Image (tube, rainbow, N blue to C red; front, top):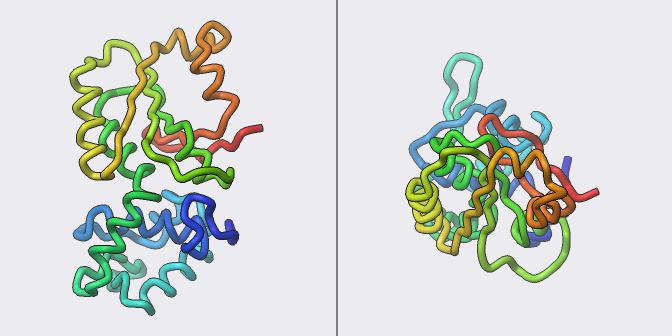
Length: 201
């Protein structure tokens, strides 16, 4: 379990706690099983269960039993939920929001890089001011790319900077200084289906 306080926002107990809240709060009407939240965050199932139990004891989330599954959703009746959602979406929100807004483009890769990815993966430093996103694919209309970035920016409340590269450029990073730099630094792969975050080596 990632038990240390996250560099992105140390007021949270763990990074998993922030990521779970981001998933649950981004759409209050959506319900999640514990297993779905564990898969989406990469946290162990038992740790996810513990985090949900803590959040439910604080009335931040609610749950109901359906068969053998427990469905979790945001508790919108709690007056703390709205301001907490703002804080969570500004910090841990980019991962689910970028994944959602860029999913329809048919990209081969969608990576969040730069200072936000570095803070999420534990690298200390200044709070990120914007979100940098690498989109790898061919024949992706720039109008759709920028529209996705605008939607994500509106949801996150901070600038989203998309960078488009071809699949050939991705395959030959030695010829593209930006891709070469991204591969050397922390990044978060939010391509559908998602992969685990990759820290810098």
